[in-house]
Length: 214
Length: 228
Image (cartoon, rainbow over all chains, first blue to last red; front, side):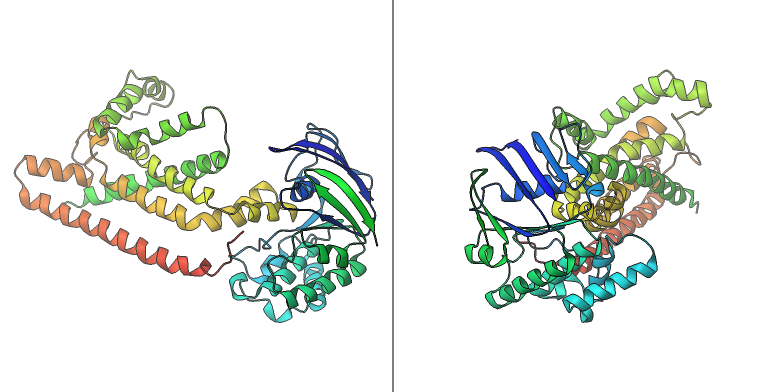
């Protein structure tokens, strides 16, 4: 269970949202500049709210500016826009980067993820040698390999062409069924929001203006 | 022919470059992408040796490291180490004049990094040190190397401040630039010409190598999708 109740002053408006979610896919939908990415960043620990609280299960991520858990300790998986794959590492090294625990566990996790995402043949390639859809899968594998307790996806499909986009949407739904952790997906594409979201929060100028359930 | 100036020059440049590389990378990384009151003041002080006449830098160093200077007196009292008129003076002069080059290259290299890559590493659980070691440093490396090479070349060619601080003592503080100057002054044109050829060859090959290397390195990431 993720509980978010935060306030943050941004340059053009005040971000003020209050929502909670279980192991579902929650979509944050709204025009660019409505505060969607900022919300993801506050959950991940890459940005700090001015006040409020963020809790995941019994872990308190944030309960005041002096009481904020570090990014590293939150165990949050994040998929960045354009994926932010490490350009100087191979696909395999990228996926390995966040794996905890011993080597045996390592190769098992990688193997499974590569199998599930169909990226086995890419192991030794570098990010600039693979396509957009492949990058997206690798980024997903990397985020999931660290066994996160929540996955945040920032415009995960915006850089893909239409067909790849549809494939990846199905992929995300499938992965969510397998992993059973909260997914928060940010998008400004209405069709995508409706296809992916178990629940959609409509954002505008930092406020939740509407909410819809599937 | 006495080759000691070559060895001394290489020793001075190597030590000063090591110090400058570590400190330059450290300060550049700490200050990169941070905005705070006084930052431009600090950076201006860092860059100052680049725009001041070497004699002014040498004068300032004499004040600091001279036998009665703040640091110089302390070093003599506590460690019995003298800076003025020793090869250590040449090292310190090289450090001060080449630091701005290293700092500037490193700051530019770190500022041009995509901060999402570092953030991605953090969300994957990497400590700040691991982020630096595995992401920031390797990705900034082409820029850092450029700074390293420039600093080395600058240290090798340092003359003005070195003359003020270390003086010209044959067998002790006679770096190549120093030898050239005093060979000319005493009419030994052939000796001067020999060292000129050596230092031109060193500088030229350094630049050629750096250009070749950075071109080769550029190709590695150029296909990377960097659009936001």
